[in-house]
Structure formats: structure tokens, C-alpha cells
Image (spheres, rainbow, N blue to C red):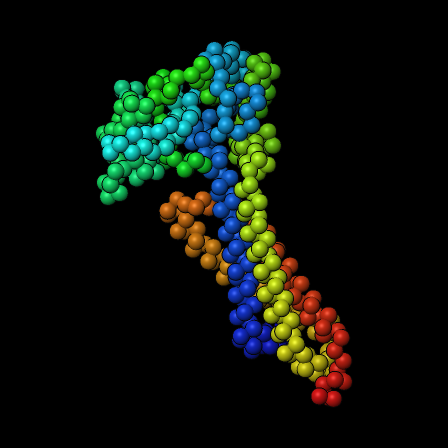
Length: 386
């Protein structure tokens, strides 16, 4: 029965290819758009990953890392005074404009870290030494800045090159690996004091306090103690989804609830589902109609309706797996290009292909159900009358 079902399916080449093409298109749209959405949400937390501190202490109304209300400088001492804190250091994070030699400006994400401990410094240096940040007017740039801040694409930025931030010289002393910023600008690291010089002055300049718990105490316990003692909001910096109260999860959910990004990507995913249903159901129904006499003949020879229905399910499931496999392969090719060019963002958690496979099989089962309903209305005697 299984072999006969596949022979009937592959024998009608035109409809078989149409079914595969429709399910391929649906798979590609669903998986690609869902993965780009996940990648974009991960970009919103790039500062948390690039700084890497266990605990972020921010103003009590802050919900996400890219929109921070500044703190008072004395808040660093307040956090340090909490017994659960092993160390606490100031952090500046803000968007600035770098002026290149030709007079053009480029937007950069500036991070200012403690000059003594380098808490929050990049962990993966490609060139240079982190200690060189103690030299006057120095910065460390990420890989994106190597090309983004270059005047000539064929002459990337290298150690020793200079540009200006707020009319103050910035000399490159290191290049590091870093996750790309949600704003699209490259990351620059410098000392906290120098970051304040690069930034137009205002009454409060401290973006956040980064901290770590004492030995024997978890980050969650330390964060709760900081919040209780200081009145500030202490977030634990961990992976998305591990805890609804961590900074990564809070940041992602803020963008989900307050921006149109989910609606935009969700609409495309829904369109992919609708296209898959329309093509697969219509084509498979036409396939059943074309083979109705053969199916009726099998029914007249004694094959039960249940076994015939199982044949249709096997045919639709087979087409679904082939279409899903081809679509996933095309998505993987797209991912290779996206990762090489660093845009668009692309992150494919295992839940995305699993959910897409379930959706494609649901489409196939709907198509099979339409064929089963039509077959159930067909009387075997009609074969002989024909």
C-alpha cells in the first residue's frame, strides 16, 4: 500500500512539483521570518551580552537596556555598601557620533568602563591589549567599526587610526569581537571618565552600575538584596527566557509589547501559512480528483475506506516532508549569507523548525482531509458505469 501510494504521487509529476513548491515557499517564509525576528530580538540585548556583568543596577523605572534613565554618581557607592555585593563598578552606555577625517559622521554605541578593573570590557580581543585603554584618548572598537568607520572600504580601520567624538580625539588601540547593536552602529569601549568627556555634559551621567554577588550567594539573591537596600532596580544578566525577571527577557518583551516588530514579522508568517494552505489544498484536491477512478477501482476490489484514507495521508505527509526539507535547506543557505554579511540578523532556535514542521504537516493533513471527504462520497459502482 505504501509503495502504491508513492507511485501514484510521483506519477503525476506536475502536481507533485506544485505541491512541493507550495510547501517549500511556506516553509521558507515561516522559518526565515521567524529566525530573523529572533535575531532582531537578540540584537536588542547586545549591550548586555557585550558587557557581560552578572548584575545590572538601573533606575527603578527602567525596563530595557536600550532606554536607560541616568543615575547619580553616588549610586555606585550605595550599591557597593550592600553586603551581598562583591564588587560594583560604573558603566556608561550611550549613542554618540564619531567624526571622520572627511568631515562625515557615523553613529556609534559608546561604552565607558572602570579603568582600574576593566569590568565590562570585551572578552574576545582580536588585536591590541585591553590595558592600552589607560592611555590618553584611546578606544577599542568592534569588527563592525573596522569597516563602518573607514573612509575607503579597501582600507579598513586599524590600530593607531584616529577620529573624533565631540571634538575630542579617539585613537584606536584594540579591535574585538562583539555582538551587533540593535541601533546598527558599532560598539566602542573606553574608560568611564573618558566616556564622560566624549559625551555632552548633563546633570546625571551614570547609565548603570554593574555588579557581582559575593561568594556563596546567587545573582538572584544579590539582586533582590540590592533592590531592597537601595531602592534601585537590580536585574540579573542571563539568557533570554531563563527567568521572566532577568534583563534579557525584560528587554525582549518590552520590544514585543511596545513596537510593531512582532506584527510585521507575524503578518509574513501568516501569509506563508495561507499560501501553503491555498496551494497545497487546491493542488492535492485536484490530484485526488484526477486519480478518483483509480481509487474507486481499489475500493471496488475490496480495499477499505480506512486504507484508502491512509494512502492519502501518506501521500500528503510525504510531500510535506520533502517540501519542508527543501525549504529548510533554502533557509540554511540564506542563513550562511546573512551570517557572513552580519545582516539581516538571523538566529534559529530549535523551536522554530519544529514549529514550522508541525505547521507544514497541519497544512498537509488539511489537504488530505479534503481528499478523504471527496473520496468518501465516491461510490465504487461509478467506476463500472464510466
